[in-house]
Length: 317
Length: 311
Image (tube, rainbow over all chains, first blue to last red; front, side, top):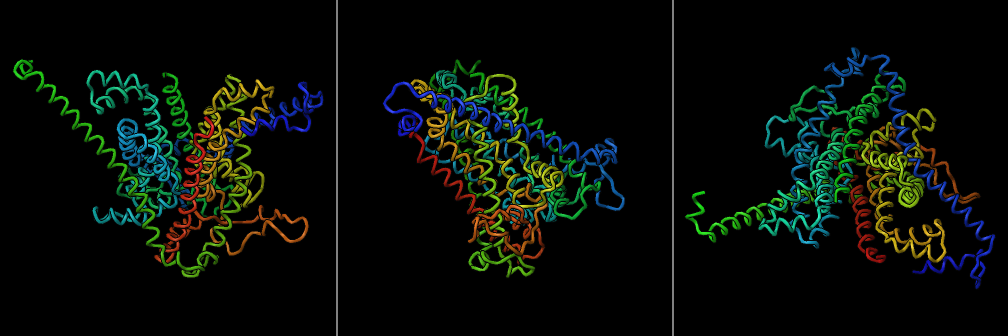
């Protein structure tokens, strides 16, 4: 380690003496205290960010809720804030969000789990170590690129299979998003499975279990809280995903759960309004923060649940 | 059971083992099939972009032209300059902040409810959808602070977005450093800050670097938060250059300039109905993917090269 020299090279430290000078010690103490304060301040920034998010969402949507009753917001089935006769029921946006996220999870959860079983129980170490970075590449692709892919590659492909499928639909972005978050759910599940102690597996093998039986009867039950965390965090990510849906699912709020129709999601609506030129302070403008608040609450609940589920599997073993 | 009596024990065993083998084979094939589909998707995304965007990718004007109403004249000059400047701001803000926060949480933070709260908070921030960060920047920076839709605000919002990634990467890198290294430093008479500065940070550098590169690669491709703050899509000029020939040589005007970035430029072209613009979108997508893939590749290389230096 070359850095050992660095201590002795400090100009304040008198060379050749065991006892460092008093001046050096004072400086050192000051530096230590200053560092402690600055580092703590940096850690506190993350709390400031959360506070800022909550403050902005609540204060900006307060104006919206002063104008639109909460009951209408939560129960009306029309969302037309930019129309002459504006209606502010967010159910259509919620339906679009839930449908697309549902399709994505229908792909990402079972496939992620199977992939995780494969990687943690079957694949050779070298295979696993090669594959994991490659999977990270899938996650690293910008979502706007996935949006392009969904709209101009997957949708035309699906239109050949399903005649009459509109150009904007929820199926195509759902499928693409499912593949995009697959590495995420797979790596979370795999982490949970790898945390299961080897002794438990060996117990299974000693009873003559096949790998498959060990995976399904021993590893998965033992890693269940971590796997549920993967599910919950995948849900959080799917709900908040923006560009794929903004590009490929269309921008019309449409109260339907039919994946063959197009429908705007919460995130797509925010993008749509941001791209337009609505004046700051108008109701439609504030509606962006109101639906943003709903989105934040949803993902917050998923994230906190995911955090505690993950922490549980870490603590057990 | 009647069968047990009739069937010999070895036959029974063979049947069970055979069933187990088949299940294993099926499971492994499913895993491999999923892997192939996933990697196949990645490859077809890239291949489709290259195939569709080829005419523009091979046109040198594409890289040096501003956006234009005519698809064949439009280029990505303002977009890639914008992306570079925004990322510069992001890096300058997020690396020191994230590393410092991570060091505090891992090395200094006492085990109490405050640290616990910060930890849950960081974990939640990592999962907050990027578009919410956009709303934060819109409400706070753009309107409350009146900073406008500038390079600085975009860099700031991407920095906040990347912050949890850097914090988590720093913490994980520090956690993997053996306790003996700290003890050795203390035994030599180093105090806490010296230990952190001279031993912990150098040892954690590969891990931090890897995490930072991956986080920044994601920030390059982030579209939603930058759209939300109201970035323009049609920018036919460049921000003032950060370097100038006369004193004081550095120029910070560019921080307050309007801008566009690669993903927004691509989004703008995708959303147009004309097929010619979608060719541009594909070409921009290739450039964007090469940027992010190159950064991810670099991260893999750093991890591979530097792994095992400190054990």
